[in-house]
Amino acid sequence: MDDCLFCKIVAKEIPARVVREDETVLAFEDIRPQAPVHILIIPKEHFASLDDAGEDKEAILGRLLLAAAAVAREKGLARTGYRVVINTGPDSGQEVFHTHVHLLGGRKMRWPPG
Image (tube, rainbow, N blue to C red; front, side, top):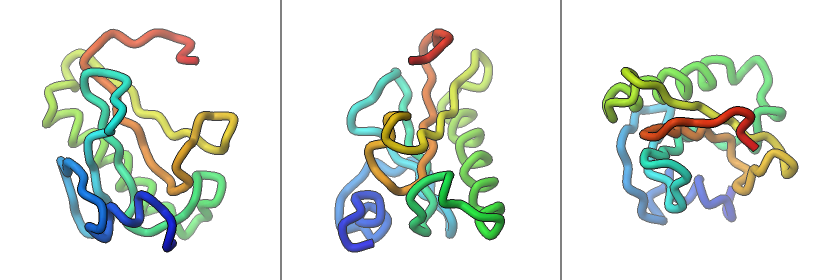
């Protein structure tokens, strides 16, 4: 997508503080963190939201969650806990329409979240 912010980050057209990358996903620090640790994990392949993901995206979605857990361990969050969020659509707060996972940690989370 020519105008997608996250696609531009994947293409290295926009800089990001990358914390993990493989052939399928890219994880980087959020520029407006909502917790002491706030990492975005995105698929390198563009699809707008979880609602747009069909069965053909099953492996990619699994990689997103496994990457979130790996980054959480690397950041020392696994011992005390962390939150993984996928916002889908405008009412959820999704601002960038490229599927992504928020990894939040480093503080006590509240429930319900919002």
